[in-house]
Image (cartoon, rainbow, N blue to C red; front, side, top):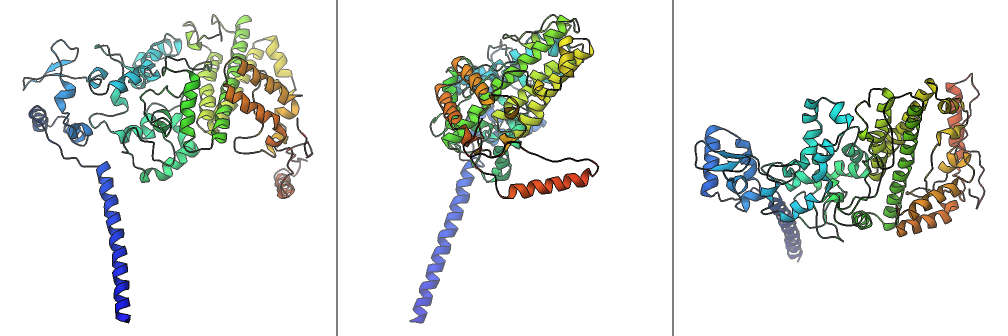
Length: 539
């Protein structure tokens, strides 16, 4: 009997092991279907191209790339993309064949098979990238040598290249030829080739964010070759996830990167996007982006986060107005010679060519083009340091430098500002704010020496500013309803109705102990807030 039981146990164990082995093999085989070494059939025309290139040793690696591509599997060879007519701008006759080929396959060629993708691209801001580079402005067309622009701005802005055949774009900016890999296009580093640097550090902001942190930790576990049109199977979003990929509510992916963008937050003023870019209203674009966020986040968190990012854009506009107002004041007193600085829709790069010959003009420019963008984009992409130290801090610092320059050159208003001892002098524009935090009630932050302590009726003031923005159509009905709900419960949102943790006094005591050790001769005491806790109190 014992022998029979032992045999049954052995059979059971081997059965389990067999099932586990089969599952492992199945998993490996499934992975192979996504990262496959394809079996391809090479037609006669393509074979001639390959044989000649391999014989001469020219661009052989590109042939290897093509052999790994879906194009190769589908029987799309060299000639299908490179065929040309005699009159084509890039026509070239191979010296050892009868072929006329096109040196530069363009979106017109891609359009033969990818009509929807080309159309979507043409309605996006990527298509306008070369126009933006060519706008007349001294920051590029006068202040920079042309040769630097060819390898600088142009290298990225050519994603919207104008071709002689009438098509626009560089498909291989994201899908490098000849593999045209979805995996590559989906990686954040592909976008980071251009979305990088002091004026648009999107890859840096992304990698700083929790999204980027998760990407770095888990990217090797992800299936980068999942079929187009399926919801993204990743545990965190990439650039493509938010701006291009299909979602659970919108099953179609898009090559229109403007389809979910609601702000022109790279511009001197943040304005809501128009319908041309994406073919839908900014409210519909917001709904598209919400569909992305809701895949991972609760609706309450995502809605509040997006509302805060919108308020940051409105706050930036006020700082930019103040920047231009001070520059106009310098002009009024003949401190600077530039014709004019305007903010009613004018781009600062529309200055006449005598601009940028004084450092103060550079500072004003950076308040839009560098610090102002980082402030907005950091808030939109969850990059705390770019919102704060690389954003609002440097915006304010630049603004003070402009005023200081005016005071040094005899501008009375600037002198009065510099001589003022009022800490509120730094708040020289309308304020936007929201009670509490996206991550939960803040039980300490709003009790400190912040503007809400120094400015009478602070919350009533910011409420009126946010309401005015809503009445101008800059916020949706849904957002205004959320803001009103948060404002109504501001005592709870800012944490004033909650007592401080018991550990608070001990932490404060030890911080002050450290302070006395550092500065024994000075009587310094840390007091993070002056307002005692009162249950139910608020501003």
